[in-house]
Length: 97
Image 1 (tube, rainbow, N blue to C red):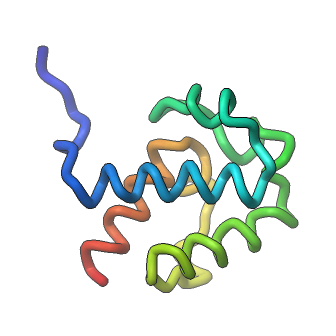
Image 2 (image 1 turned 90 degrees about the vertical axis):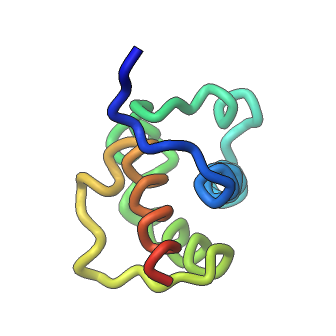
């Protein structure tokens, strides 16, 4: 079966794990809720814990743990819409370092 998803790499798997840890730590999501996150799982507007106030804390923690810089112009609804979208954005940021 053909898929449009990017190939899993060690870095993308590492990014996935770190993103899950940050969502748990910053938003206080349970392990069960974290484990249920799929690429198309909604984030902003779908998780009550991820409101506009929590976004800044989430992005700051991701910058620190992934050693990246997220510019203000990078932040938009599409990037935060789904778990997979945010993960892909972070993998891309790490790749350009």
